[in-house]
Structures are given as C-alpha cells and as structure tokens.
Image 1 (tube, protein in one colour):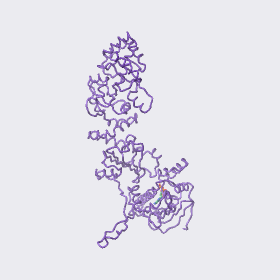
Image 2 (image 1 turned 90 degrees about the vertical axis):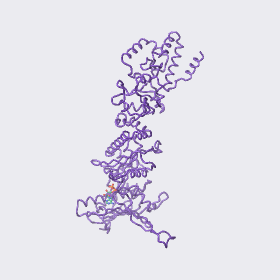
Image 3 (image 1 turned 180 degrees about the horizontal axis):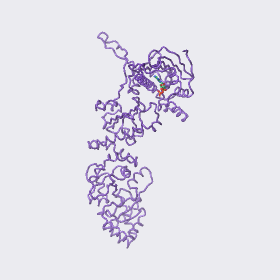
Image 4 (image 1 turned 90 degrees about the horizontal axis):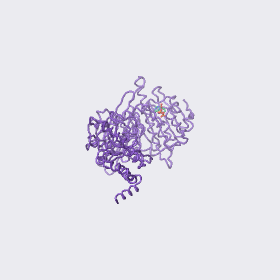
Length: 628
Ligand code: ADP
C-alpha cells in the first residue's frame, strides 16, 4: 500500500489544537494515558488468545524507553495491535466519549481552562502536549498486517504499510522544542520516567520496563577510576497493589508502612479498613484514620477525598464524592474495575458506581468505629477527642438522614459520674420513672451543678448529659429522640418531673396569682412571660427558653452573625421567701417592686451565662440597693 495522507475530522482537529496550544502544567499525564492504552491493548490480546486459538498469548510487557540524541520517547506494548481500519478509526477520529466530553466542556467554557485537561482522560491525543510528531507502528494479532501512522497533529496524518514485525504497538514521540516555559527534555531522564510510572501507573497489571543504570562492581585495579555503569531493563511498577492482595497475605506492618509512605505520616494509623468487594460492582478500598488530625486539617485548603484508581491506574488524588464531609479526616483509596479511565469530574458526581461505593465506604468506617468503641473504650475516647466534633456535625448536617449508625458513636460527658457515656448507656441506666433524656449546657459537672434548674432533677437522682460543644444541642435537635426517649433540656419549662397532683396545684396557684404575674411581666419588657416554676426547689427563680431555640443556640448563631433571640420565660419559685416579699412589695411600692423584679431577672440571666441587655441600668440599681 502506498503512503496515504488523510485529513483529521473536525472534532479531532479541535482537540489536537487544544493539546498543542495547551498551557496545562501537568503535561506529564501523557505517559499515564499511553501506558494505560498499552495495558488495555494487552488485555484485549489476552482475552482474544483465550477465545481464539489462532491468536498466541505472550509474556506481556510494556516498555518505556527514551533516546536523548534523537529526543524521542517510545512506548511499546505486545498487545492486540491495530489493523489499518482500526488505526484510522481509532486514531484518525475521536473514538472515545471522554475526549468528546472534554471538547464540549471546553466549548462551554469558551476559553480552555488550564485545569480542564487534567479532569479528563484525553487518551492518545495527550501525546501532542509534549510531542511535535507521533509515529505509531503496529502489527495486528487479528490480521497479521503491519502499518505505520504518522502525524504532526495538524491537518492530517499519513498511513502506510510497515515492516514492523512484533505483535502490538510501538508509539514514538518526537519531543517538541524546548521553550522558555517548557523544558521537554525533562522527560528524557531515567529518574523522571521511573517517577512518572511509579506515580501514575504503579498498579498496572503488566510489567512496565525501562532501562535502568546499574553500577559495575569495582575491581581492585580500578579503584580510583570513575565507576563503570551499564543499563538493564527493569520492571518499575509493583503491579499487584497492596489493596488487591488477599487480606491474609498482608501484614499490619506492611499496611502501616504503606500508609505512612503514601500519606506522609510519621505515626501508624489509628485504624485501617480493608474492603474487597466482588460481584455486580467490583472494587477494593483501603482506608485509614490518622492517629492525629493532619496539621492542615482545619485549614481552608484542606480538601477531603479518597484517591481514585481504576484497574490499578491512578485517576484522581481527591475524589470527594467517595467520602461524606463529616468523615473528611479519613485517608485512603478506592480502586474499581467498573469505572472508565476517562471519567470526568462531572461524571463522578452522577456516577452510580461511585455513589454505591461511597455508601459502602461510609458504612464500613462507621462499623469499624463501632467495633473499636465496643472493644477498646480508651482508644475510642482518644479518637473521639480528636474527631468527635466531626461526627457530631455529621449528625447535624444530615438532618433526618443517616443518623442511626452515627448516633451510637457519640459519647458525651455525664452529670452523675466522671465518665463519658453513649446514648444507649444513658438510656439503659435511666430510672424507672424517668421519662426523658435530660441534658444541660455547661463545660463540666461543676458548672451544670450550679444551675437552679437542676434542683429537682438532682433530688430525683436522674443523670444529665453535659453538652460542652457548640454543635451539641443542634445535634440533639437533629436526633430528636433515642429509643423513643425524647431529649429534654433542663432549661425547658416543663421537665415532666413532678406528679400530676402537684402540677395541678401549681396551675391553680398560677390562676390565683394571675394579676401579680401579669404585673411582674409588665415590669420586664424583654421577657415573653413570667410563670410559676414546676422545677425549682431551693432557688428563687430561673430563666427558660420558649419554643425551639435555646439560649445556647442563640449564642452559637449570634457568633455566626445571625440576628436571633430565644424567647425568655422567667420562672418563679412560689415557695421561696423572695416570692412572698415581692408580692407584698407590689401592693405597696410599685417603683421599688419594678426595680427588684429587674434585678431578679438579671440574676436569672447571669445564672445562664447571659449578660443583661442594659448592664448600666443593672449596676445602677445594685448601687442603689447597696446604699439603702
Ligand atoms: P481510549 O483509550 O480511551 O479509547 P484513546 O484516544 O487513548 O482513547 O485511544 C483510542 C483508541 O485507540 C483506543 O480505544 C484503542 O482502540 C486504540 N489504541 C490506542 N492505543 C493503542 C495501543 N497501544 N494498542 C492498540 N490500540 C490502541
């Protein structure tokens, strides 16, 4: 066959233009793409050899070589090769969907975004990012013919017969001339090639070989002379990734070393989770929880995500679709046989396989944490100190969803003992007559102990969860109840603590003191209501929040610049001396009553850690009182 010149299709030409003019900095991915094509080609030959006796199998390998003098890089595989028709169909037109999508994305964006190339597997054409001429010599195992394809990536390419006599394909890249910004010679380097193969193609199933410099042993005579070297063809990739090995064949030490090397930690991980799933969806996941949060964990630049591989080929460093926000501290990777190499970021978001894997990854992590909680409480509590906040946010952020397995992983301080407690442990130890799970806001037992609202709860001997993180109460609101026991803040007006008869008595008294309570409320413009308390024993009064918003939530939201205010209810203890005193005063000296009512209100606020709206007025009335 005489040499033929053919024009590229319009689409292909566009893509080539993009590659040639690309200012993308990760031009090195060309090697990943070509090696991956080579590996696919070997897969195909191997498959054919199993089904067709005319097609021989072989010792499969991929060779990456370079020639400094001619400035070429060659990638050779002994895979299926291509027939003339295949050469034209596969390389003369855009065959793959990834490239098409890539073009569409670029057109949508109008200008080629620098980063956009990296998000797509752009296959064969990525060679033109580094090469001015690409030559493909190939011999097909299906029809035994050899052909040569040559292109400068411009308007056209040529195809012709060739005497290439090895099954498979040999792709030669003639590197572009160096420019001020781009030194293509960097690829003509043994170490660079080794590096790139390790980085992107370490787990390709076939050996990837390159020429490696070896030092000759020195004889006694030439001790002082320059060391002599020779080149040896050596396999660079490890082929079988640690996560693909049978679990029983991998030691903890191997896993720990792998983790430390790969994720640059100096400590062994807190936990390692090895997942192998085969079936409709086949994948492996290797997940690690670092012993301590990484130094940039709370920084803005910290991106969550797991590394994504498909069939051992590295695709993406941080695939955020694989891990929920609240587990952002988990490091690791997923390798699936069911994802295309050219999967784009947009596709990842929609990809059903990715979604399924993510659900399972989350499940496995929670199951492992639950196992540690059960078997090694001390270790778990240490973990919770470092990462507990994330789990709490997980519950809050997934309002109404996913709460079940997560809520059992929460541990909180408790009032009756200096120990952390799960919801389940709390409920198991509830007194028989206890209806609710009580909680109070405070940094520790002492601060909660001082709350007047605790009077009756203490007298009943009930336990109280102590919430000390900002997110805690929001989290409980999201959970709503545990084992059908509702959560109740000690700040809520009705704690359900007194029996019906007593409650009725107080309600009757409330009716009786209606006018006095009304007067009290009028004296306090910032209060929604003044009522008689059903929970105070020794204290004269307390303040509670009405409706869904608590004082703690008010504080947290205010800190986020939200203008909110919880409704304040002042509860009075009708059995307290002060109550009788104020009632008497209201009848004789309205002004004095008003002043004292306000002091009492501020007292109740301060008890809650809330500053008075008008501190100056409060100070003035205290001074006046002192002067009396
Ligand atoms: P993709 O590999 O994603 O399909 P490419 O643009 O990289 O897209 O390659 C297009 C096609 O060219 C491949 O699908 C394959 O059929 C063929 N091809 C590329 N490289 C080789 C090779 N080394 N051996 C055999 N066929 C190849």
